Length: 395
Image (tube, rainbow, N blue to C red; front, side):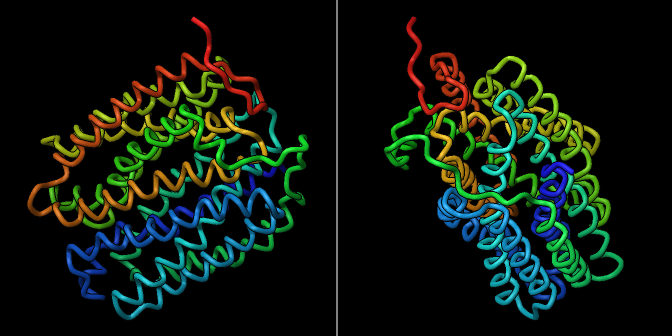
């Protein structure tokens, strides 16, 4: 059975565990005495612990056996998920969110590097895109399950069951992944991490990805609450509606965007296009006057964002030395994590006064400008598949 199958399930569990909490906010306010502003910290402490750990996780992924790192990550974040379900105060709950962030950080750069090393360059976007689709499938399940559990069986049971599922899946994952030693060097010179800092296209890609992620996590963290406040939906209905349309459209966009990028060998250009076109729909979704319009705009956002999600990391791997794939994935995800954590916190502090729409308007303009710059660079570099060499094209 292909490794994508085993990793897809693990990544879906990853997002179920982190995502379901956002549909439970009213229950956490009621049972653990979270304030409205403190709820913003639920997402922020996760991202601000997850994010700084990503480069270190990437370095580990480039030096040690990736299959073992992935299994250990699953075991540890599943234990942290159970800890959230057993929490008796906001402080303890936030502590376990920090632990979850640190332990989940080990998974993503390791899995991306593992997939890139096992699939040929001509199919890289499709392989990474299929893996990425688990994020959005997990988001749909987590968004619905979290709200449903909070309304029916209790939010604690959701965390306990999800954590137990991860613990039970870990031996299956361990048997399903091939032994993955660190990549062998094809050069006498060691790969220099500073090569990433000297790559202007990589830096522009990282900035574009960060700006996009600040929008994406507004959807992940606050769209259920927005639908509850604006259209008076229950936690179950808002958790379902806020994830089903967006995440389904994400998956469709990922599959089409990955196929297109592999077909035309233009991953950076497809990434830039996805960022440019998804940004306006994020603003429209949080400023629409009716529920159908809001969900329609959210669906359009998800579709174009899927094209970006399928190709951002594959595009980065086209730009860098294959021996630095883990580190590159960690840095790219770190940039997105810092931006996301800041936006979640700011949105939580200002949602009662300024509202979501003005914040998304600023993020929309920033993302579109950066996407245009990335598209410019994407047309001026020529890539040698599976080679670190990237040089400006002559015009």
